[in-house]
Length: 381
Image (tube, rainbow, N blue to C red; front, side, top):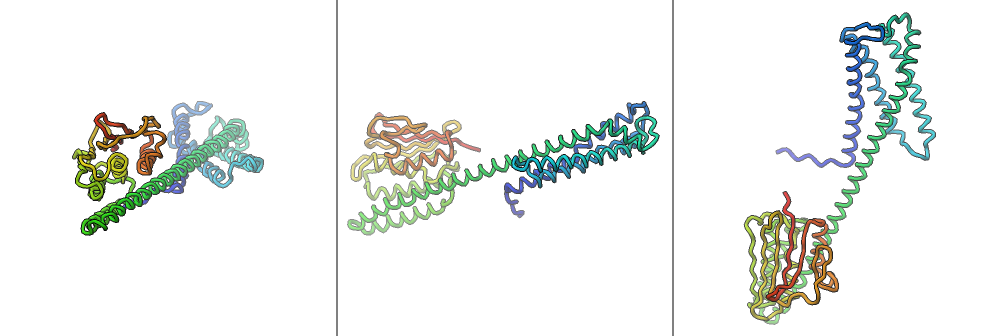
């Protein structure tokens, strides 16, 4: 089995872009070299003299491809000499000197090629070829140097921008993961303390039941540790957690608590935030129902609604107190979301970080009595 290759780092991507840039700057001169060779082969030079294609390619290819070498020199200068306003004059002096050297070398080379291949009509001497090359090519060589320099700095600025953008994105993702993990870990002791309180109450009344409840708490902790470090877990795994939590809750609420969980088979393998349902169920028990009362019910439903996963938790308890107000995409009870407790506040924060504005979280009173919490999450992939 072939091991998966490690993901590219920011430095790796930067090096890859540098290599690609050097290859492109070296190869791009094939285009003007080919066009110029075709011109000399089919149209001829200024005197009307035609040359065979092989000679034209050798002649014009050499004249243009030399820029493939000079472009590597320019790219090296760009890498080593940064464009900084504090050192603008040394930078300008360096490239003016490089321009003079490169253009002089190119003009001398072009003159030698023209004298060798007999371009520009009657080339009687190298001195004559050099004078014609200076008149016809020096200005173009200067323009080409600074055009290459400008293109090189443009690529360099793009590379730096991409590196900074990816670094910022990775930092933001790490921060989000840290925040999500902190929020998730905040829930673990929250439900654990409640469960242990239930065990403590039972110890004075029914030791055997307290032992069984403590075993369920251990199972619940085992399941929660299984999802430790995972922001998302399958629906079926979350349902296991909720079922165990309800078994522990029945110790406190008695046989009068009727809990029903229904899950559409098509959504059991979808990924949802870990510990998403437990705070909703706990909120219904804590704020809606009361221990020892008869005919109390809580219902949990998960199913598809078009392109969304719909999660509904309903109870037949007291419902929400006070007026309803809208806070973003979250319908909550006044005076504030924080007033609803750590569970729902935590849940809302996690959903906002994971899904942005692509989720819906609403709470409302039922006409028949009780509270309804509805969450809609996008089904991705």
